[in-house]
Image (tube, rainbow, N blue to C red; front, side, top):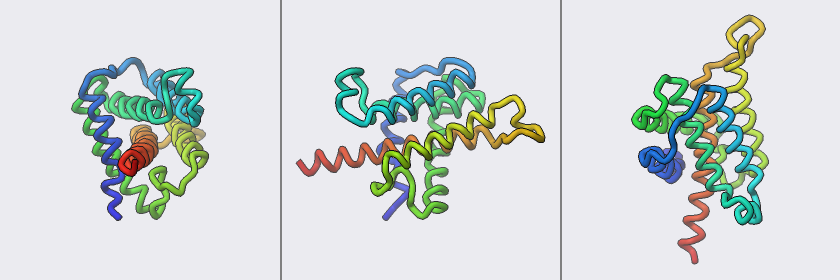
Length: 178
């Protein structure tokens, strides 16, 4: 087993979108975090096919959009909005974070086929909450609970990439087996 390869499909997929310029960074931290939250919630709600026909999006597309928004949030927090090279460097940080989390949690990541989508959702939303908490006005005071907002945002992007990679890998294997 080679966990360093787990995210390859999603990282390449998202890098292609970022390089295409199709997505453009828009807005301040709170607006960008709201986009991550919206796309993440959209992905969770679109577990069945009827949503695809109603809205033209499925879980794969929603997770991809959420992952892109999360990468853009990290770039924005680092002062590089609309800079594709900064965004691509974020993908390297996502890969490193995934390997750290893989080791820490003994492979029990959103890429794990045994993990339920409910568990993936709870993990994702918990991390999104940590980003929001790190952005509160009192985050860095005695009463605040702020963490490193960039690190927290990288963790959100990592969870989204791992979940997207699981979907892409399953889809690839299903198509290969047909």
